[in-house]
Every structure is written in structure tokens, then in C-alpha cells.
Image 1: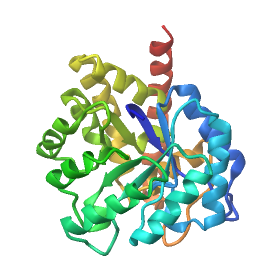
Image 2: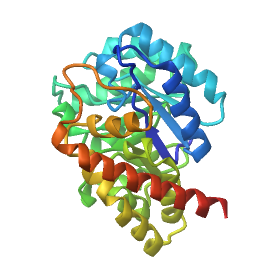
Image 3: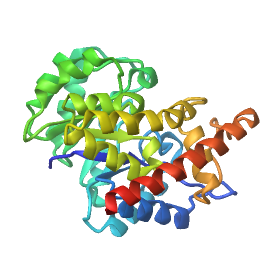
Image 4: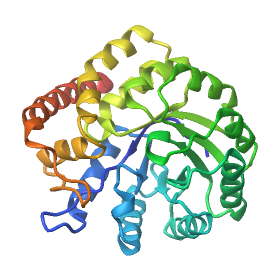
Length: 301
């Protein structure tokens, strides 16, 4: 497997009663496919994985695999704080038809680099699915260092890394790991264009939930080395990045999806977008729709 392009970390739509909204889920999946999204992540942190019960995880992933029908890779978020539990969840994802697992560094427990090596090697050695490493220190409390990632990249079942640190030095340290069997992906929307212009294979994005065609176009421009056009589009997207950070992810992006009829809310302890941000959400949605129209027209030309 060689991952690249604009990959969406999907939000999980819920009904007004707090149950899975499978109709909205299918419409979100279809919208992403029609926009040209390169791969899809089910039950990642944006998908509120920590709030999902096992049968819900199964249903979301099974539905996605069936609807996608092999057109793009489907990644399942299987990472947890316990190695044995992560192996078990990765096996579940494999049985449900996922193409790869997105495995975050173990949240809360803060392992050493030696512990991270042992953790990811144990999951990869089990062999259920190819693994994409996921480093997001503000959420997990630990940082997968580039030298540790380099050791893990040599494992034949570890096929990439989603790096969510925004410093250019971190991406520069990871880019030499790129190869036929290992992809380096940005996990930070505001700096994704910079990372892709520097050579990153793509982005696993939150904002692409609402602007999938625009992110497909952003990747295409960056991959072609068109720094001016990529920078111009990235500048237009900046207000969406800013809105996505006004409250913890995925609160803002789910507010935008709700305005499009794709779900109604979140699960506690996450709460709905604060009322003082409602006007900003309306402006962000209007901008998203404008950018999507322009990107669809450009891609179709």
C-alpha cells in the first residue's frame, strides 16, 4: 500500500437522539468519494473513537467498506493506551475489511521511545493490517521522535506516518524516510500545504470533511510543485483552519457538517459549539461552499 493525496479523517454523524446516523454517514462517504478524496479514516480522533462502542465501530467500518467497495483505501483508527487492546482492535478492523490501521501513540500513559518501539512493533508483528503511525503530542502526552519513526519505518508492515506537529523542522526530519514502502503525511491542516510542497506525500485532514474537493486540489497543486497556486489556495483556506480551532476538534467541523444536514451533535464530554461562535460558523460554511464550487469547477475543466 502506498498512501498519498488528500485523506479525510471522517467525523462520525450522530442523530438528534445521540445514536449513529447511518444515512448521514453514507452521504458523507459518498460526498468524499465524489470529491476525489484519496483515502478515508474511520473512527479516528475526529470520528470520536473514544466515544464509540465496539458494535458502533463495527457498523461504521463495515458500512464504509461496503460503500467504498475498494475505490479508495479505508483506514481504521485502532490505537489505544494498551498494546494488547490495540492488537485486538486492529484484528477486528481487518476482519471487517479495512485496508490499513491508523495507530496513534498510546494516549495518557506516556511511554518512553523504547516503549513506543515495542508497542508499534508488537502490533505490526501481529500482522493483521498495515500500520500508519500517528503522532499528535497535544492529545496523547507523548512524542514519537523522528529517530524512533526511522527505526519503525524499516518494518515491512509499517507503511507511513501521520505527523501532526507543525514545526517545519519536524517534517524535514521525517521526509528522508519516504520511499516506495513508507509515506510521510501531514496531520496538521494549517501547515499541510507547506509540508506537501516540501515533499510530504499528502495530508490526513480534518477540514477536508467540509472542503474535500479543495483539499484534493491543494494536494494536486503541491504535488505539481506549483507553489504560487498552492499558496493562494492555502491562503483562502486559512479562515477555515482558524475556525476549526476555536474549540476542541471535532466540535467546529461537526457544527459545519450539521449545517449541511450531516449529523446533529457530539457525545459527552464534548458539547455543541458555543453560541458565541455561531456567526463564525455561518461565515465558515459560506466560505467552504464558495471554495468547493471553485475547486470542483477547476478540477472538472
